[in-house]
Image (tube, rainbow, N blue to C red; front, side, top):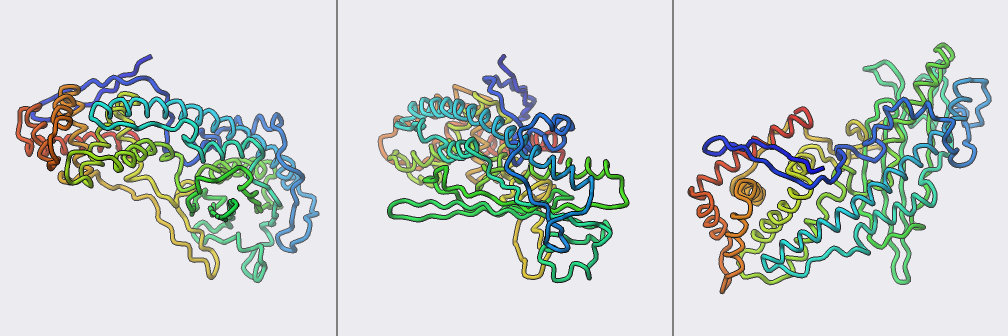
Length: 461
């Protein structure tokens, strides 16, 4: 059924704007992976269904953290984790495959529709020839999905067992396996971490390329880091190397065994929900796909001739406007606001889990990462390209086709190259009935207020 988004936009008096949008399902993209987005880590039913999952991989080695040899102590906790870990991994892998296949199918369909509508609208502005290449659309993502379908990326190589009663700084000195443990003086407890390295090796007849993604996660706080190189477009399924995982657990002889099992299994599900994400090369799920069509369209337009000067200003301004119009029609106004807010305030390329933590636990580790900026205010510069984007979006939301028709008439009947900004200012004045300066100032104020309200409503700050 069609959905209607209501947005109150004050400008020289109250104005209630009703925006109708085609109902295209979009899940919340304020998440890093399909598994974390689906809330698997907090789903108690996942572990209840454990026996139904197909085991993933072969038998996992169990190593005594203190000696580095096979673990032989008769611990019910270790036995349960060793028995259930392959089931947990198998269940998560199959769930990820199903979620990503569904997501990819949706993106392929809506992406082609988005491209077609943008191409049709652009053609009326004499911007011709834009087309989404169906065969190569999201090519890298489709390659990852095929590789995921062939076999899992993770190889749970070993479980490293540490007995809590034996842990101390002196006992762990010079133990290479202890690099993934630390004592937190604030909580007065031990914490564990996992570091993963994703390698891609691409060999062609005349070229060799390599890309690496490094991730780390504190297994007890679910905070960590993500550092990734760009995945080449020429990647193929066999280029992805298996990711070996050494997973540490801490068990206690004094604590209730079933409580330990429940706690550790829940943490394993949460941990893997964050780090088992083969799609997060250079872009997290909350930003993946969302800027692709705009970027492709602007690159296409950059290579075209057009009868305006100052193309560095004009190209992004007109590209944003046309793409925003299609976005409002397909997804609704909230998609524009949400993507703006996510990229501006919540998009850290280094974020992993609940918060960013470089996990520099040992001497010589000096990873530099940036976290999410918190409590930032929405600020839109009136004279910036971003400011013009929201001024023109505001014009479209208020005046719709009359605004577009006026602007189209001016741009498509140019006889020689002219400065583009006066054309936009003239259109604003003719359609709105007020001076361009007055409208621009009021529109920026209104859009800032609307985005701020949206940000507070969606994300709480």
